[in-house]
Length: 315
Image (cartoon, rainbow, N blue to C red; front, side):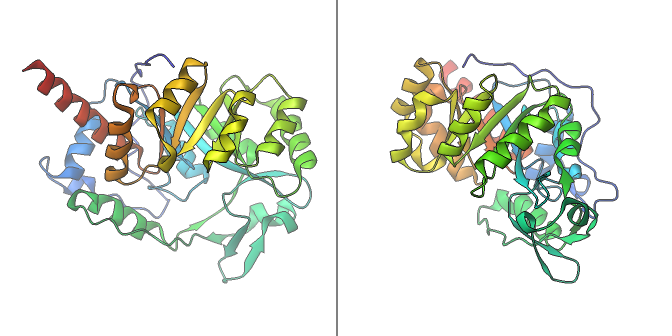
């Protein structure tokens, strides 16, 4: 992939949320704190050399896959791609959710595949998460966001609502097949007739199902989500690979780039993980897509490392 210089969008900075239940405290941090540096970087952003994908929307500021999270990612100049998860309801409609089971405000479990879309889309849900504790002092900003989001009320977005809120960003559609390959594929093709699809990339960890979808609709880009090395045999069949972070190997990435494949790496939320990946990739670190819940933190970290590298090499 050629290096892409991102253009500064004219959208308003997303570092405030009204009506979402999330209060972001960057304004209280001074410019010398880590959070303050990220805020300043965002405000003064004029482009960089890295490709960032907002995982399930800007999911560290608003509930994952919600309209709010997607809108924030769409309005953020740091973000190049938005990744969302697609599921099929009982009545054959597409909605955005990573998990098949969600929880309503009364604590009742709702199974998306066994629920009609009308009931699902009008139900007030509660977001529950099991946050990972980050020990690095600069990761406090990450811990704070996760704590605030836990217990937030939200509504599931329909597929078309999600596509609308993505704006002009490129979109990764992570398709959650549930032994419904034919039905899911037909629903996607039907819905996408009403959408500008130039920017859409299909991806899935169910690679046999993804093969079927590509056979039906070959004119899209397709990424195979690779969990383990044995799945790399599917690489020639698709346009790109989504590599789990622990599988990143410079030779593997270089070979696939040389074969015209695009590469994304998921899901990078800890800065130590980012450092490990970029050190392994070395000169290829600008040729991959970084998928993260924290686009602003990751973008700042990557660009800071790049600035330091250039400074060191100049001496």
